Length: 164
Image (tube, rainbow, N blue to C red; front, side):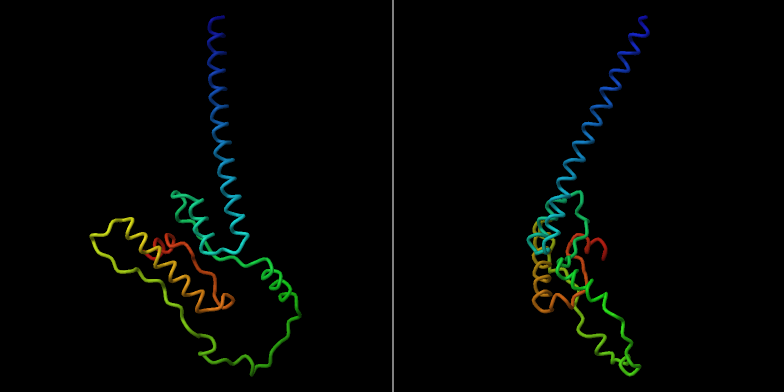
């Protein structure tokens, strides 16, 4: 009988441990779901520089390498869907001939790292790079219409890792 009591106490400990682990897991999952809901709400809106920074902040340091791209607005998506449903019309063969200057227009340069020196702290260097990258993004959006740009990365951390 003593053995049976000990086993039941042992089973109770195991079950309470499992319940605690399950509670912790569910709590972490709820927190992560809340974060992702906030991030998705920001992404539903047009991704502005401020929203991109908020997304990075919400993802936290453990997810620094999360890709961030500009999203199309719902109105643009509807317009593209509508345009895709139009009848396909074949062009004459003369219309298919294009010059290279029509295909390869201006090329947008990659962002370059700003100058630095060994006396700079890590925070100064990262701040300087982030400021330069934001300036580069603003210049790109001011110089070229959004419709002419292809999708590109808006997270400096991902660019640094992928280029290195």
